[in-house]
Image (tube, rainbow, N blue to C red; front, side, top):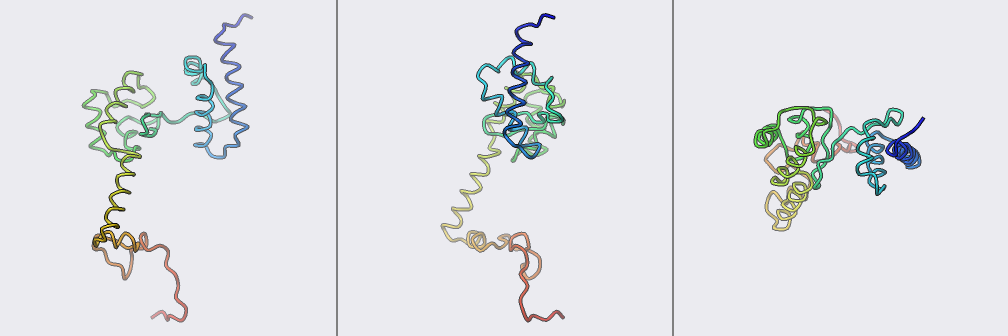
Length: 188
């Protein structure tokens, strides 16, 4: 039986990817997916061959579940509609997802059905918005600035208390942490 050169390469590539997955010792599904992505990126000649055989590879229940948007924006799940999948990126909500899809005139289909052009256009459009790591860094800088100038909100942030007027006698457990019992205090 004669095999084409792509089939020969795909067999050796599949073996390489499978072995790298086993040797990495990944515990969770997301770690295995990241390990698979790292294994693919570590092979220099995988670009076209890997993309053709990746959907056909089976690693005993391990499969790639996300599409990497690129540009530090993160990943979106590939089994959800775009309007919902875009909301998995920090800083993109319902209205922003609808706005992006209407601006790009992309229908609300499953994320795995995106073409290369649509994915590129989506990546370029997401670069116009502050989201994911950029947004987290900006919020951290804003809080650090408030703490530095010692305004009321900055002081409350530094003390680990709510800074928007909520009560603290009861509740505020998210900010204050788990309640510590005080010895000798009677319950009434």
